[in-house]
Image 1: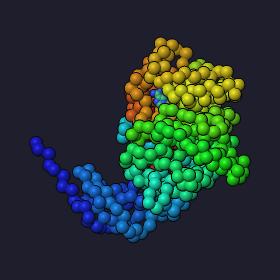
Image 2 (image 1 turned 60 degrees about the vertical axis):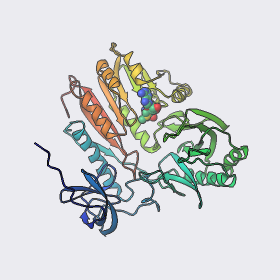
Image 3 (image 1 turned 90 degrees about the vertical axis):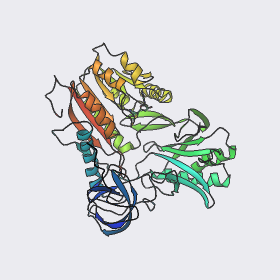
Length: 470
Ligand SMILES: C[S@@+](CC[C@H](N)C(=O)[O-])C[C@H]1O[C@@H](n2cnc3c(N)ncnc32)[C@H](O)[C@@H]1O
């Protein structure tokens, strides 16, 4: 039988009133008009709005907010004056409590829809104590325009740079240092990369800071070439103007000559000072290089570390910490445990950081393997020593190969740390088919004001525990 074609009930340019019913995973409001889904950016559940349709597709349409008719009680004034232009945050116009409800629901819905997992308990959400001024790394794009140099973030869904002076989610010194570097780039007329023409030198500016040690590392991502030494001198001299023991400890040039959206290239050159900063969290002193991964919210990272530790309480035997980065989880666990802990990480710079940190903290029961999780997990397949595996993959989640190895190793417990509920749910669906059940789910708000969240899930083998949540 031929499919009946769904007739889109609206046309681009049409204007009407809508009530906003929910918030989509993108942070946009969701509404319906004659059964057709419409997204309404910059709105909150409970708003009454007047909109114009700007895009239609067979499944949904997109509107532009013309007027807010009545405000939802969940709405709040954004801290950032350019919030609605900048694509960095998506939830600043929503009260923080409601942001928490949104995140809790996002994880639950994703587990149900993608993972086919019905939890028999409510996931706990751990809000941030500091919902602003928490981010320890700023990655700024640059653009020269007729009106001057723009240094900021991309507008939502575009590569248009929105100039920003004071970003209220960044640790405060990062804003000040960025402005001082902006002045140097302008005064010294440094060539700035033009993405469209793939020409120019300075592509991005990275400022990474430790909230605890107050050390700051500067990254200058460029195409091939050299800086005038006076530019580097200028940046180093920013130290003379910093108050409160903040200190730039190094300036690193990262070379990326490819025509790509990926920020970092593979080659690093030390231009001044040292090529890492010292970070201190949970009683461990970590070495952190420019290109190594590190959680961006130091306050909530301590909560994350404690959560993983609690979930692994009582494990006796080897713990594999896969996708281990600079060993933030491995070293923290090793400090309070006698179990052998093995970190696996493909980024060799991060592995070097991890090994140095193990040495400087006098940790002997923790070792690190450089290479992919896919490659190394295979070697653990046939041995019964591994009692727990931590999975902390990037946004794309674990590969089939990794999940198959985990199911062959069959550790007593798995702790899955994820920044993407969709891939987490996909992977849990596979792990929970026969062997594992979900024992605990905690959502940690690592990224206040944005749609992102960190989820930590404890899985146990079914024969050990009665089935809870598939
Ligand atoms: C989300 S980060 C987690 C890092 C660390 N667990 C932490 O909490 O700081 C993911 C890490 O996995 C690494 N990675 C990505 N794909 C990998 C793979 N196939 N095998 C091993 N490491 C990988 C990245 O370099 C990154 O350091």
